[in-house]
Image 1 (cartoon, rainbow, N blue to C red):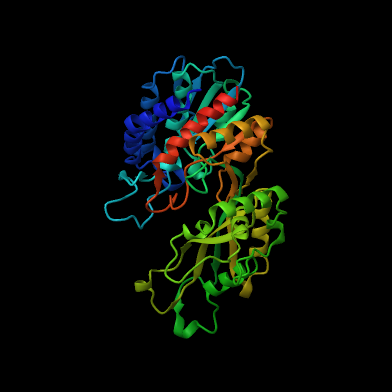
Image 2: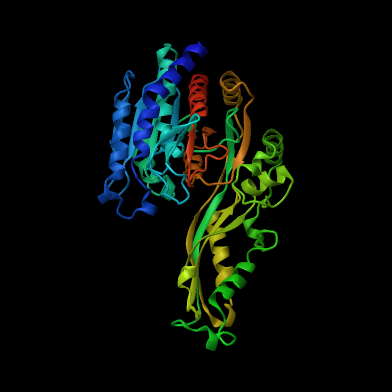
Length: 466
């Protein structure tokens, strides 16, 4: 391989084709079905997948087939198949084209559907999470073809409901099972990176249990002056119930069944990653003046966000805006709870355990319910020597730094499903969601130089997989 030619091909494709098309993609508000009940009638999903499909058809790649597959009532899936050259192996490359909702807090002149290129960053919703994946995958394959190099048979799957939990994907995997075959390697470009200076491999993903805790104590609101002291506040009852699950002083989850033993190798990987990243582990977050992280041990902070359970309150009902809040004891309170669970904890069992603890013996006889669901996490199999060598060499060649590994605190729901479906496959889970890229939040961006280097690394790994 001529690495200089590889980088030149990748850089030119990004500059001339990928960035302009990604900018058009960012303009489309194709929110995932969980955030847009009318996604079919709005037609934004169709706009997005047609845009990506058209770009793929425009790439001159011998024998490549590009097809939009539709199962009734489900978000369409883009299926790309590139025949092998001098190889009998198959590699599955994954991405998604649906997006998170807008979120508030975008800077002036920026916005979720307003692409802005500034300081080597492409701002806008979905560019890094995960619109670039299709373009990077196909460009990596074409970069090998440009030099006449061998490569495996490549199957690229781009789904439309990852941000909703990938509930459509298993149906497409089953429908396409014979066409997909048995991949030697699965490449997922929907993960994060600790910094933009090296190739990062994701070793694990936490699971997620999400549900709504509802507390009702009255049939209707009453004057707080006459009722307080006689009737318990529904919010106070909710606080009591949450204290059954979480130590409010430390944030530690008290339900032991939500904890898991952390493997020794994951602790060591966290220690190495902490030594590389230093204070950026917490300084990447926009703390208000005077605020800081929950602790000072960097390794422990990484383990907290990758292998330990946590609880976040992400929404509420029954609470009027402050300006509208009168002297009324409200009849009920609903809180949306988001639990991150360790990679090895079964999310369904965790959900049932949480439900039992919250609903048992409700204070003052209040009506209490917790309704939701969960998705389990994932821990990668040991890295095969050939993949470790190919990925490690790629990082050195294109980033100039050794590859590093870390777990991710977020969830990619389908990873466990793919692991079970393809038990013999190796995994390269990586991405461009690095420090301050702010996926799902305001001012989300794609770090363009990292995207280019990652594309070149994927090409090298594909060559190494033959």
